[in-house]
Length: 178
Image 1 (cartoon, rainbow, N blue to C red):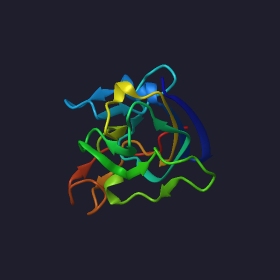
Image 2 (cartoon, helix red, strand yellow):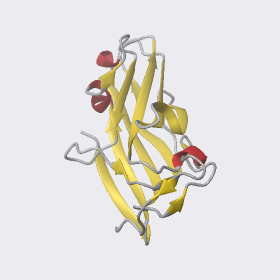
Image 3 (cartoon, helix red, strand yellow):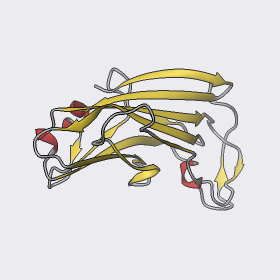
Image 4 (cartoon, rainbow, N blue to C red):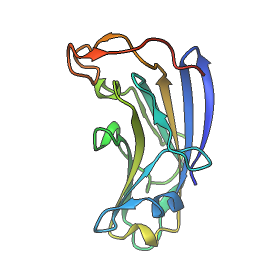
């Protein structure tokens, strides 16, 4: 079960850490070829972390503690996506989790405009393997840190490039409390 830690960074700003192992991906949603698995980022009880209406993921960091492998896996990558956008790479492109673990081996960055949302969303992590299936994995642990501005019930109209339709009405107001 992937676990979550939350660190408050100020009013409405949080850093969330998700700890994923190869077993989380073995229990995830598999494609027909069983080379790709998607999991919803969730708390220790298995409840999917909902990205609140109007929230923004403004940064991420992926760092593996144990290389993903087993069987005849020759490559493994993880990306961070959105269930609402039906995209495995909405928030972060593929990061090589098969490579050797080292202090300087990680992926980090600021997310682009599609990270803004005017609809509730669920954040996903997608593991893609080469040369073997997810069930044959025997190792792998990854930390995903997300830096999030939590807003709820935004007021006004959606601007261009923030994930909404330009000029579309958005209702409500206020910070999402943390």
